Image (cartoon, rainbow, N blue to C red; front, side):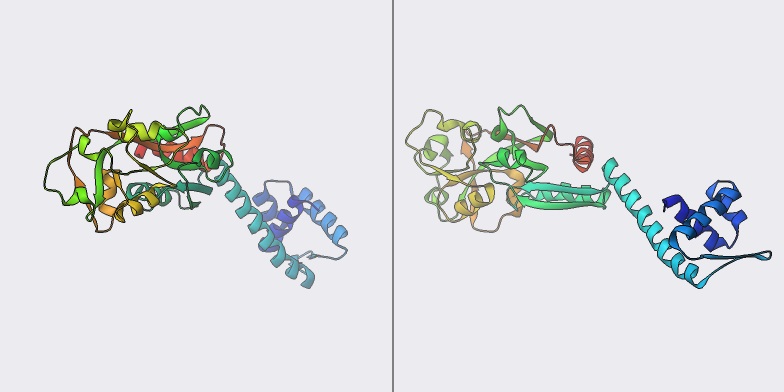
Length: 291
């Protein structure tokens, strides 16, 4: 049996008229009649009672109509869903997130989800050290990251880039938090500095430029930014934190103005250039306009 045969039968069964069915299906009436007879022959039983007064359904035809109607509706939904996926307005998008403090990031995802509600968004933890490997292996489609972390990878593209001002934060219990003196970058030398570890040193250099050439300052390397924030709050070191992250942090930290410290960090949404996920393409278009 063919889909057209089922469509012709469904139309005749619903209209109880070969004439109206042929008009609805945009095909000559004899063709409708011929295809339904072929369907009945294949099934081995009659679907319609044909008389000079019109057409009615047999008991078998009535039962078959209910099943066929459901099948055709399902096929239509499947086609519409597949079409939406091909256009990027449906499907799935896996997003790598380094820490829950990225409230601006979560806000962007919320905006995108509101615009494209049929795209299923899954949040997945991104690890700073191996996020390139995660992207390459398809662990997620796109991830918010610092540009220096993926420097040197020509197959990576970034969208929605922005520069964030960094400030030095520390636990309220840290000795530098309790001193009344105005801090300078020299005062920070020698104290442990926290950094989300990357496969290169460019993030460290961009975050703490005053440590260039210094070998006496301990570097506390953590798996991701979330762990870094927790480590700072526990008092195990100072950390450079983007200004927009502070509102999402719990109590227990202070931000000190440090004379001589002026650093910004470029962040953006990173993705593999050869990733052809239509939902990702839709997100890239969204990011170019709204982020």
